[in-house]
Image 1 (cartoon, rainbow, N blue to C red):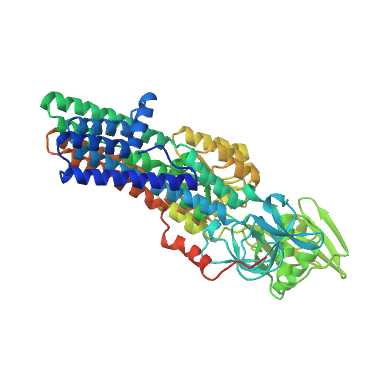
Image 2 (cartoon, rainbow, N blue to C red; image 1 turned 90 degrees about the vertical axis):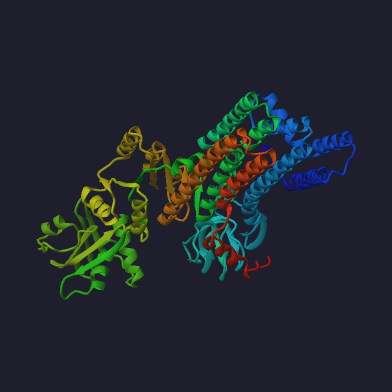
Length: 634
């Protein structure tokens, strides 16, 4: 109801003390009037007026400010009702209405303060200092003095202060505040760690990549803070509706008085109508929705994007790095009879030793993972569009496609290899040995995530630059409603523009530089946290943990937020229509009118506040965090 909210702790404490004092004055004065303590009548008027002046001051002040600004607000209508009640010596009614309004405002302030305390909790969670290796020793420095590339030391129980990669040590890290994961994640050399996570067991040394506001945690804080200052279209609609309802209430009150000449019924009409619940509840719901999404690991960069996400009917996916892990791996070894898989892989890795091709790197990584450390070939020759011919320990090794082997006179069976990825054929000394299949595997959660999105009634679309065979195979496996392949970045941009031109509300999720144009063209752009900086900057939402299940959860939060807002809208209109009708026909006195007004306002604010509450599964990480994990001393 009130637009004045305290902005810091000291102001908030002072505000609370004054609010309690005004409520106490209203309660005491109303009780004395009810008990008819004061006689004669003029004394009642003086004391009642003084009590109203003290208790109702914030209401009257805001009403006067709104009048000067030519804004029709609920404070103005309540002031008219209070003054009208006092003018006909309904002091008890005037004081009780004032009391109800003060109680409603206090609940609103407490609820908003809870949201702001959640932001303060986010800000204060990351340590302000870190221990850094400099000049052969470990020194403690403020975060502002740490630069990318420096090595930060994090002991067991300490919070990670920066985003970076582990360069030494092994541990398990609680990163639930960023990714929503309930279980600690294993971290070893090469693993990525995020600021705001908690090191649980071993000592970690982390090479810094981002510090402060540039970290994933810093961007979460910025997103939640921005939610208070950005106004989604639905918030503007709520403010407009609040103003219109005041006009309606005053018009109905004037009509009631002209017909009935009953000032009490007229006052009841003014009092019962109100849109305070939607005016306060709408921004509160958006703040709660963005905050809840942040706890899951989704950075939503403003209320407008949360609102739009709740209306999305089509979701478009890039493939590589979004539906797949973005890095080719060996998925299958098909060795001919009499040849061991290990020997097939070892020879392929020897031939690929000097190659920097992503498929070659995947073969070498797989060989190393199996303990088959590849050795350097004595000679090797690369043939464009064919493959590699290598000599090692007196053997001639061929690694490439069918054309390479055919030109060397090696016969390859028609069913050799798999069609699920890129096929690397291997031969040695003129004999075909088998095939190594390298593919970019689909994320393990992708199938379930896409199925849930389909169940929500969303049209799922895959746009990929891969050839049609690969695109159709991935799309069929995931249950995509539509697949388009062989696309350039400008093609994806054009397709999404065509979708939005048909009035579809489109969300696009991608991770690469080539996805940036499509992300900006979509109604809502969503970037994977592992994606490029330009993709994350172009996107409206960033999924830090790269978990597509979090995309589904974020979608559900957006829909719940929108549903709560429209519940408040509908409830307000129904209650106001019924209340005005009852009051106009003399079936509602001013006290009952005030009770209905304030009761509905509290109900709608509490309805929005549900989004601020931690669900059981979201509260678990915090419980774990506080249970016996005291930070180690520096």
